[in-house]
Length: 197
Image (tube, rainbow, N blue to C red):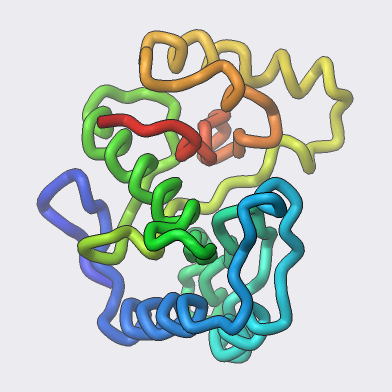
Protein backbone atom coordinates (compact mmCIF):
# COMPACT_ATOMS: atom_id res chain seq x y z
CA UNK A 1 0.00 0.00 0.00
CA UNK A 2 1.46 3.37 -1.01
CA UNK A 3 0.22 6.81 -0.06
CA UNK A 4 -0.76 8.94 -3.00
CA UNK A 5 0.35 12.51 -3.43
CA UNK A 6 -2.71 13.37 -5.53
CA UNK A 7 -5.10 13.98 -2.64
CA UNK A 8 -8.02 12.50 -4.56
CA UNK A 9 -6.77 8.91 -4.52
CA UNK A 10 -5.56 8.64 -0.95
CA UNK A 11 -3.98 5.18 -1.18
CA UNK A 12 -2.63 3.00 -3.95
CA UNK A 13 -3.14 -0.61 -2.98
CA UNK A 14 -0.63 -3.22 -4.07
CA UNK A 15 -0.85 -4.80 -7.51
CA UNK A 16 -1.71 -8.07 -5.78
CA UNK A 17 -4.84 -6.56 -4.16
CA UNK A 18 -5.84 -4.66 -7.30
CA UNK A 19 -5.38 -7.77 -9.48
CA UNK A 20 -7.50 -9.86 -7.08
CA UNK A 21 -10.30 -7.32 -7.30
CA UNK A 22 -10.01 -7.02 -11.10
CA UNK A 23 -10.25 -10.82 -11.44
CA UNK A 24 -13.26 -10.95 -9.11
CA UNK A 25 -15.25 -8.32 -11.01
CA UNK A 26 -14.46 -10.17 -14.26
CA UNK A 27 -15.82 -13.34 -12.66
CA UNK A 28 -18.90 -11.44 -11.48
CA UNK A 29 -19.36 -10.11 -15.04
CA UNK A 30 -19.20 -13.67 -16.39
CA UNK A 31 -21.71 -14.95 -13.83
CA UNK A 32 -24.32 -17.17 -15.48
CA UNK A 33 -27.31 -15.29 -14.13
CA UNK A 34 -28.03 -11.63 -14.61
CA UNK A 35 -30.01 -9.33 -12.38
CA UNK A 36 -33.38 -8.69 -14.01
CA UNK A 37 -34.85 -5.19 -13.91
CA UNK A 38 -37.98 -6.34 -12.08
CA UNK A 39 -35.81 -7.85 -9.30
CA UNK A 40 -33.56 -4.84 -8.88
CA UNK A 41 -34.66 -3.85 -5.35
CA UNK A 42 -34.59 -7.30 -3.79
CA UNK A 43 -31.81 -9.34 -5.31
CA UNK A 44 -30.33 -12.00 -3.04
CA UNK A 45 -26.68 -12.82 -3.54
CA UNK A 46 -26.65 -15.64 -6.08
CA UNK A 47 -24.62 -18.85 -6.08
CA UNK A 48 -22.52 -17.77 -9.07
CA UNK A 49 -21.71 -14.50 -7.28
CA UNK A 50 -20.74 -16.41 -4.13
CA UNK A 51 -18.48 -18.53 -6.29
CA UNK A 52 -16.89 -15.42 -7.81
CA UNK A 53 -16.07 -13.85 -4.43
CA UNK A 54 -14.99 -17.13 -2.77
CA UNK A 55 -11.25 -16.66 -3.60
CA UNK A 56 -11.36 -13.29 -1.80
CA UNK A 57 -13.07 -14.89 1.22
CA UNK A 58 -10.38 -17.58 1.29
CA UNK A 59 -7.73 -14.85 1.11
CA UNK A 60 -9.18 -13.22 4.23
CA UNK A 61 -11.80 -10.76 3.00
CA UNK A 62 -15.00 -10.67 5.07
CA UNK A 63 -18.47 -10.48 3.54
CA UNK A 64 -20.37 -7.50 4.98
CA UNK A 65 -23.51 -7.07 2.87
CA UNK A 66 -24.91 -6.72 -0.61
CA UNK A 67 -27.38 -4.42 -2.25
CA UNK A 68 -29.05 -4.31 -5.63
CA UNK A 69 -25.85 -3.21 -7.37
CA UNK A 70 -22.90 -4.08 -5.17
CA UNK A 71 -21.33 -6.65 -2.90
CA UNK A 72 -19.42 -5.15 0.03
CA UNK A 73 -16.43 -6.93 1.57
CA UNK A 74 -14.02 -5.88 4.31
CA UNK A 75 -10.36 -6.19 3.34
CA UNK A 76 -8.15 -8.77 5.12
CA UNK A 77 -7.21 -8.17 8.73
CA UNK A 78 -4.08 -10.31 8.36
CA UNK A 79 -2.48 -7.61 6.19
CA UNK A 80 -3.70 -4.73 8.38
CA UNK A 81 -6.18 -3.74 5.71
CA UNK A 82 -9.35 -4.19 7.75
CA UNK A 83 -9.80 -0.41 7.96
CA UNK A 84 -11.04 -0.64 4.37
CA UNK A 85 -13.97 -2.06 2.46
CA UNK A 86 -14.39 -2.79 -1.23
CA UNK A 87 -17.63 -2.30 -3.16
CA UNK A 88 -17.72 -4.81 -6.04
CA UNK A 89 -20.16 -4.24 -8.90
CA UNK A 90 -22.94 -6.72 -9.53
CA UNK A 91 -24.05 -7.02 -13.14
CA UNK A 92 -27.40 -7.06 -14.84
CA UNK A 93 -28.55 -7.44 -18.44
CA UNK A 94 -27.67 -3.83 -19.24
CA UNK A 95 -24.16 -3.09 -20.52
CA UNK A 96 -23.47 -0.73 -17.61
CA UNK A 97 -24.54 -2.29 -14.36
CA UNK A 98 -26.19 -0.46 -11.52
CA UNK A 99 -23.12 -1.27 -9.40
CA UNK A 100 -20.71 0.39 -11.81
CA UNK A 101 -23.11 3.32 -12.05
CA UNK A 102 -23.30 3.65 -8.23
CA UNK A 103 -19.51 3.33 -7.87
CA UNK A 104 -19.00 5.88 -10.64
CA UNK A 105 -21.36 8.34 -8.97
CA UNK A 106 -19.60 8.01 -5.61
CA UNK A 107 -16.23 8.49 -7.30
CA UNK A 108 -17.41 11.61 -9.16
CA UNK A 109 -18.79 13.15 -5.98
CA UNK A 110 -15.62 12.31 -4.03
CA UNK A 111 -13.39 13.79 -6.75
CA UNK A 112 -15.48 16.96 -6.79
CA UNK A 113 -15.73 17.54 -3.04
CA UNK A 114 -12.85 15.67 -1.35
CA UNK A 115 -11.04 18.89 -0.42
CA UNK A 116 -14.13 20.59 1.02
CA UNK A 117 -14.33 18.68 4.32
CA UNK A 118 -17.85 17.36 3.80
CA UNK A 119 -18.85 14.36 5.95
CA UNK A 120 -18.34 11.75 3.21
CA UNK A 121 -16.50 8.48 3.79
CA UNK A 122 -13.34 8.67 1.65
CA UNK A 123 -12.98 6.81 -1.64
CA UNK A 124 -9.38 5.60 -1.34
CA UNK A 125 -8.75 3.62 -4.53
CA UNK A 126 -10.73 2.41 -7.54
CA UNK A 127 -10.61 0.38 -10.72
CA UNK A 128 -9.84 2.34 -13.86
CA UNK A 129 -11.59 3.31 -16.05
CA UNK A 130 -15.07 2.07 -15.09
CA UNK A 131 -15.10 1.92 -11.26
CA UNK A 132 -16.09 -1.75 -11.23
CA UNK A 133 -14.71 -1.72 -7.69
CA UNK A 134 -14.09 1.04 -5.12
CA UNK A 135 -12.09 0.87 -1.92
CA UNK A 136 -13.34 3.07 0.90
CA UNK A 137 -12.55 3.49 4.57
CA UNK A 138 -14.43 1.16 6.92
CA UNK A 139 -16.65 2.67 9.58
CA UNK A 140 -19.06 1.21 12.11
CA UNK A 141 -22.56 1.27 10.62
CA UNK A 142 -24.84 3.65 12.52
CA UNK A 143 -27.58 1.01 12.21
CA UNK A 144 -25.49 -1.39 14.34
CA UNK A 145 -25.04 1.05 17.24
CA UNK A 146 -26.81 0.07 20.44
CA UNK A 147 -29.06 3.14 20.51
CA UNK A 148 -32.69 3.70 19.53
CA UNK A 149 -33.79 5.02 16.14
CA UNK A 150 -34.37 8.58 17.42
CA UNK A 151 -30.82 8.69 18.81
CA UNK A 152 -29.47 7.38 15.49
CA UNK A 153 -31.29 10.14 13.62
CA UNK A 154 -30.02 12.75 16.10
CA UNK A 155 -26.46 11.46 15.68
CA UNK A 156 -26.43 12.16 11.94
CA UNK A 157 -28.36 15.48 11.92
CA UNK A 158 -25.29 17.76 11.76
CA UNK A 159 -23.84 15.69 8.92
CA UNK A 160 -27.15 15.86 7.05
CA UNK A 161 -27.22 19.64 7.43
CA UNK A 162 -23.70 19.94 5.95
CA UNK A 163 -24.46 17.48 3.15
CA UNK A 164 -27.69 19.31 2.28
CA UNK A 165 -25.48 22.06 0.84
CA UNK A 166 -24.52 19.64 -1.92
CA UNK A 167 -27.42 19.96 -4.33
CA UNK A 168 -26.35 16.73 -5.98
CA UNK A 169 -27.24 14.68 -2.93
CA UNK A 170 -30.78 13.64 -2.23
CA UNK A 171 -32.65 13.48 1.05
CA UNK A 172 -33.41 9.82 0.41
CA UNK A 173 -29.71 9.12 1.00
CA UNK A 174 -29.83 10.77 4.43
CA UNK A 175 -30.97 7.77 6.45
CA UNK A 176 -29.05 6.11 9.29
CA UNK A 177 -28.45 2.95 7.24
CA UNK A 178 -26.26 4.98 4.83
CA UNK A 179 -24.02 6.44 7.56
CA UNK A 180 -21.03 5.03 9.42
CA UNK A 181 -18.99 6.23 12.36
CA UNK A 182 -15.38 6.85 11.38
CA UNK A 183 -12.92 8.63 13.72
CA UNK A 184 -15.90 9.40 15.99
CA UNK A 185 -17.70 11.25 13.18
CA UNK A 186 -20.85 10.21 11.31
CA UNK A 187 -20.00 10.09 7.61
CA UNK A 188 -22.20 9.28 4.62
CA UNK A 189 -20.96 5.96 3.22
CA UNK A 190 -23.52 5.22 0.51
CA UNK A 191 -23.91 8.17 -1.86
CA UNK A 192 -24.07 6.56 -5.30
CA UNK A 193 -27.79 6.78 -5.88
CA UNK A 194 -27.81 9.78 -8.22
CA UNK A 195 -25.76 10.91 -11.20
CA UNK A 196 -23.35 13.71 -10.30
CA UNK A 197 -22.29 14.98 -13.73
